Amino acid sequence: MSSTASNYDISKLATGQALALVASLIAVAAAWTPLANSLRTSLPLLVVIISYGLIMAASSYVEEEQHFWYWMTTAWLGLLWIERYVQGPCISSA
Image 1 (cartoon, one colour):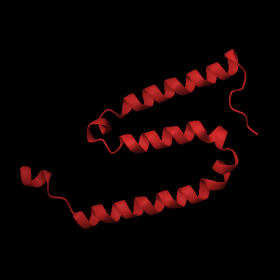
Image 2 (cartoon, helix red, strand yellow):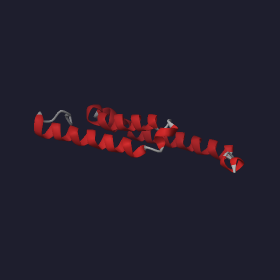
Image 3 (cartoon, helix red, strand yellow):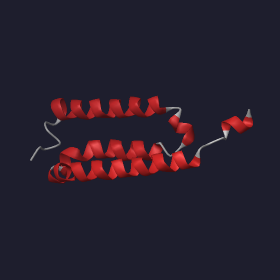
């Protein structure tokens, strides 16, 4: 049983990581201009993307991914509520 759990095809893992890196670079290149033009409005999205990417490196947290989305959704809804009802727009679209 232990040999089955650690019988990885390293070449397929390396190929998958290389493809993921290429896809990430293409996505960043495609999104760079709109994100750079409106960095302030894109900041919450960038924070979520970067923090999600960082926690995926922690193997114990991958199993608890629902906590990330619970807290990020709560924070996002709180930000929207503050923006609308407390102080007006805190993130400008210009």
